Image (cartoon, rainbow, N blue to C red; front, side, top):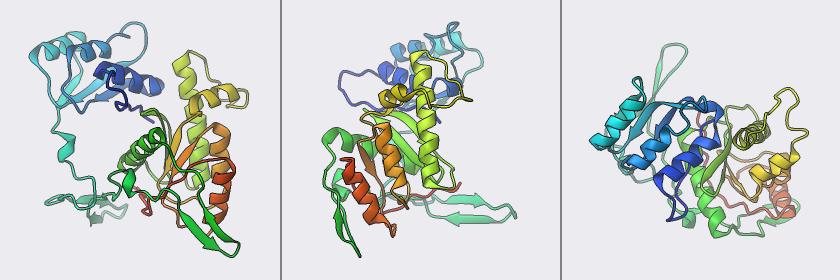
Length: 294
């Protein structure tokens, strides 16, 4: 897993966002990589090293749009081994259907040594207007449709979750976000409900790390329901493919998730919709899978 944070309040500084991303996954940040899609300012550079000597966290790789000489001098004075990269604007990277992919291809090496060449995956979801807010399916039991629409905050988190899922979660992949900050990621599982189970366990462990409590991996989350609710209450979840059964929705509801975005397309979509309605979960549709086997 990794931590990420986006600005949801104009009062949030880049240093604030760094701390939110860092604290979302403290354990993975031993020798962490910090990436910024803005100019790195001095206050944020200082935040990179504010735990020096107090916590195992340290920055091993640093990437940003730009730096000034004072910031570079400060970073290098704090760490002699940090690797520093300057990246181009992420807005130039093709992300959405219709963006130019000229001279850009994706290469996948097979175990046999053969190489698969394919176009880049681009999503058609540019904004919440591209989502089907209250999808309906018809089966032998009749019509099933989502009753509750997602609110503004949920929609913003759903889009963030979807974009992270598209960009970096191995299938079966699920991404949980709350107020613009990652809560947990479940990826690389052979069944969807397993990805959700993995993410919930990881989310509890990450939350306990952030709050300064020790997580006992051999006992699991059985005695930590309070931490689970605190971590996931009000969070949203994206799924890179459909839910084959309602069991995933029941787990999400138990954790406190209030909205889900997914492609739909299962023969059991009706039962999944019914479960979402039972727990007042909003569940818009993308109508596109984002499977990533890489």
